[in-house]
Length: 65
Image 1: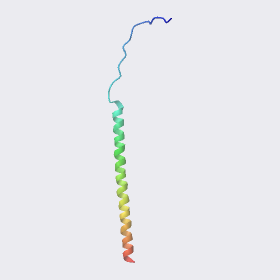
Image 2 (image 1 turned 135 degrees about the horizontal axis):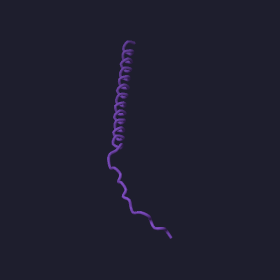
Image 3 (image 1 turned 90 degrees about the horizontal axis):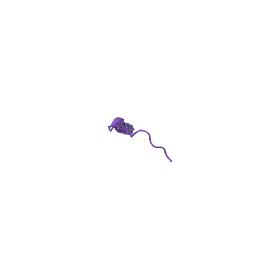
Image 4 (image 1 turned 90 degrees about the vertical axis):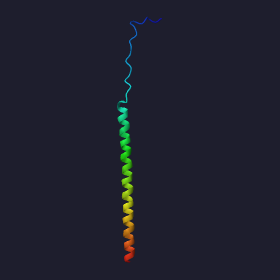
């Protein structure tokens, strides 16, 4: 047999429904994505520039021989 409950029901406070830190966490990841995309573009451009310079140097060396 269970004893009867003492006291009445107490209302609980509902949780706050807001964007909270989740919004800024998502913004942070979008910023990381933008930096990574910009980095890829920079690396590809520098690689293409280096290949173009190597090709030009090889053409000059071939022309002088």
